[in-house]
Length: 312
Image: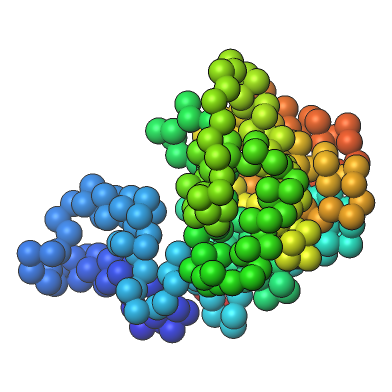
């Protein structure tokens, strides 16, 4: 398996292949040897579902965003990465753009998105990243809340009690007023940024109105962080096949607002599994709305890499 290791494949995957080869040659290596294909399947499934634990070597740094990177880029996906970068450049120039990556499970959609993250951060952009969960489909804004909360946590960790965090808090209060408190219920780390001056609001509203208000406030939040840091904002949402309607409607508002206000720079990148966005899915509605607007939309379809690509 040395040729596989030379191509920077994770050690656990190389060990799995070596184990299979030993078994095929009738040289079992002890208790950990595979005795039937279902055991191989189970190990591969664990690597797919929890790659940071079971797939990547623990001394490779920030494994969840590295991927297979011979030559400093995602293995076998150079053309697709270049397409995303070109689309992003158009959005930074003042347009409103989105990219949807679709493909089978294990085709490298998420890794491609996280490789693009490096490009955004290297250029001084803001990158928000969230992931929908099949078990949280009934929870509105779950992935968006996670993306914003992680970003606020990074701000606190990197900046501490710096003036820029204080400026962000001041700008949010100025732009959103007391309504900013509604965002703190969704984004706990934002409450830390704003400090104890944020007062609670007691207001009884039905669910539909509450969701519409949060959609508006999230759009305002993106506008404020973009203007505060003078940087374009990228939102990356993974596993769109499990997205809730409220979250996708918020993305629609963000794209529409950016397309109407030429000074706003917003880019949306989403990943979904092939064949799981049916006609009634919220993402399908988003795509139809985008077609009727001035928002640019690029679709990237990833196929599983063939033997020639892997061996090149």
